[in-house]
Image 1: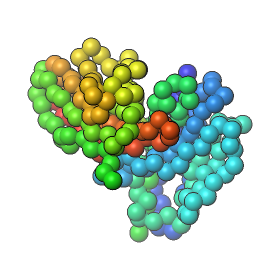
Image 2: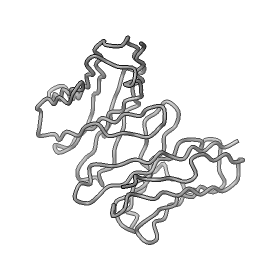
Image 3: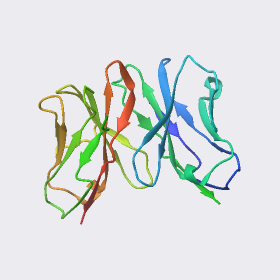
Length: 115
Length: 114
């Protein structure tokens, strides 16, 4: 069965701190994709990144970076020098390629960045 | 270039009433998904359309729920005889065949059943 676990329910940091959001997934497929979405208070899900199961290279985009480790079934997300605008709920999701591409989401991590 | 739109944004109804939500995907997006998100949870998949064909339904979609996409453009999700447990945010997403993995989400319809 497919499952995504985000064990951190809520994280609070002070602006400029680095923060890492954890994501652990379960799947029997060898071909799959992992995603991170941001859901700000307005409610609309915003796509951040997609990685496929064959590409374990870490990725950096500005203050955001992602660490994908198949050996531990983890896909962690780090925000460097956090800002108040980063406050949101962040969701990790899994998609199995041969399964209509529906997204299986974790329960989310609420990040609060205080000034 | 407009994004996915959903109407209404909020709906309050009494238990037992029927409600219908509409989703307009991004133009030319032939794939359309419905998800439901309850408080403190991640979105859960409900159903999926490719053009006008409904190709998958979650077991979460009881017989009180029906979704349509008659002309392969907009979609409607109807809930009959609403129950308090139906209170949730209903999210619609769309994607293109050639990049089906990038789903663009709408702002959602928040349903409150009293």
